[in-house]
Length: 475
Ligand SMILES: *Cc1c(COP(=O)(O)O)cnc(C)c1O
Image (cartoon, rainbow, N blue to C red; front, side, top):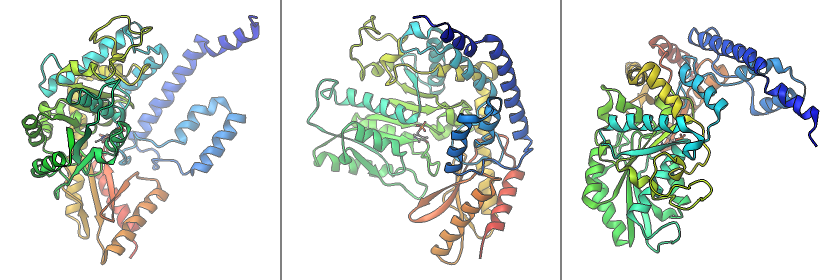
């Protein structure tokens, strides 16, 4: 039965007049947020509530909160990345035009597994990928797809590597070969996950030791390959990190690329964090050798000012991208073959957001120079902060930063004291809430870790952080 009350309720929820009014109010709220954040009108970067308090609040709010307060409360109770004292994990501080495009994506909801369900979004995605491929120096046959996050992107690329290098392991068959890949011990943990998901087990990943700068010891590759072969393993790929997550170290991609060419191995580059640097004249040398890669990934939601999630998976020879998921889905894919415009043939995801439009908007409204400036500015903050640390007594860097990730600690008499003092500083920073800084543990040593992703952080903010940490140093 067609119930009139259903229709009325639905009409209320979809009312264009209310949408216009609330939309304007929301944009006003967010514009104020942007302005206030940059001007540091409030000192705190994140809310004080524990997870229990958050849950209790949102439970109560759902029951009896004032709906007109929803967006204010969401803002109030979230961490604020646009605050110049946000120096924590490596996600972009989203640029407004990309944010507005996200709103558009949500309204249009073009799912785009097939061209018909995302005609503009599909073409826009291709332009983003081609812009990137061109910056790498690749030819026209380079191609790829966008997907939701570096984790999924790495798995997607590695499945392609497997289907090319070990073709007897196909969609329908399981190979008896012992497949494995080589990667630095500093690689992101999602590589480990990808290997386990592919069913290669612990033996499926060979961790190559790193040098003092946390870069892969490429001088060990020959020896490690021989060892693997003697053990009856088939090495599928070598992965370069550009850069590693914990310390921001860039592997020598030229050396890994040459090694892969020599031994006919797949060369994959995990450039989730550092990939945007290809657009920065001053910094792209860190990525020398990336053009040798068979596949690469880049998170536009890390160093390209796009909101999460937008990740490119690119192949030097784009046709490889079709190999993994070449199975049937007759109701979707009536066209057989390698049609670039049905992106679902190359992604894990069936439905996805119109993610390409967010990056396209940045390219269109601000140009690639904007991403270049974003990278330049954030990387410069990394070296500026490192310089300040080096000029201070009683502090040390874990390693000279290559980008915007800086890992450091305060020194004390014993390692034990060292750990206690640095842990204390981090605890007190979290209680204080005026800066957001994270931490990492290397060889049992506790370090503080900053990633500068807010291009409006200034030298004075870095000084203020150092002063505050100094005051938190307990003897
Ligand atoms: C962040 C990161 C990932 C994971 O990407 P998500 O988008 O968070 O899934 C993978 N590799 C590296 C090197 C990273 O820095």
